[in-house]
Image 1 (tube, rainbow, N blue to C red):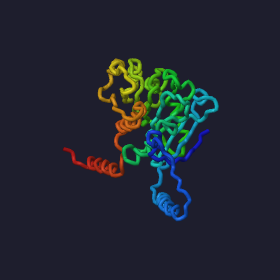
Image 2: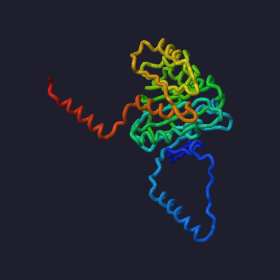
Image 3: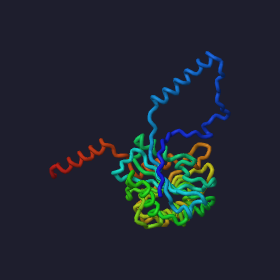
Image 4: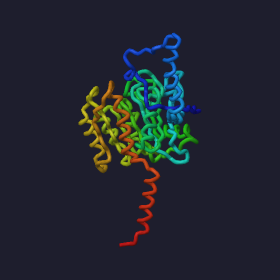
Length: 322
């Protein structure tokens, strides 16, 4: 059984970082004319906001069961979540981005899709609205049971099975292009060779992702070898920062190269990120994910671009032979 939740997402998130250190509302005292004089501007601001503020970008969030008994604590349900932006045409297949969260110390459902550290649904809305990405569906499972240790995250997860569950959840609202699936994993989602993005890289199921993105994950020889075993059709991207987590990336590169050397060079890329903010380990995620998806999917196709390509193709067919 799936649950559908309609949400209006705003790009701004009120966090402790943006909240003033000492803030308390000032309540005007009732002293006749002075109170009215102070209240009128406030009322006018509220009315103008309600009447003239741009409408919020509202997508559809679908919660669904995905190995709840295995991955979730008792009394937790519907660990899967899929988000369909409003720009998605239900009759046109669109890419799917699968996101695997890392260590879950607070045992929260839907990390990064509503329950901190950031809401990637709002980011996806913004990226699509700006023309950075084409319309796409974002989906993620949740793990709260045994979620404190990277070596136990996402053990046994199957990409084919999760994509099928997400497809059922969004049926009637979106069609997923199975040949345009991207898998991204943050932190501990790339540490367990028997689970997470490392297992998905080695699997040879019906779905071959066009890209696997490691976002500040473990980077040792074993991880490099695991990602290097991905299909030739799957591009590998790795992003990391060294402010709070120093790793011997050279070991990762050596492990990766030993099993990936037979593939054409240039398809995969590794990038050190100078992340800023209170916690660079998390701050790295949105910009790196945006860049990776942009590279893997290419620029969005607009109506003008499509018409130009059609005209060029038509002209090429009509051109006389040399």
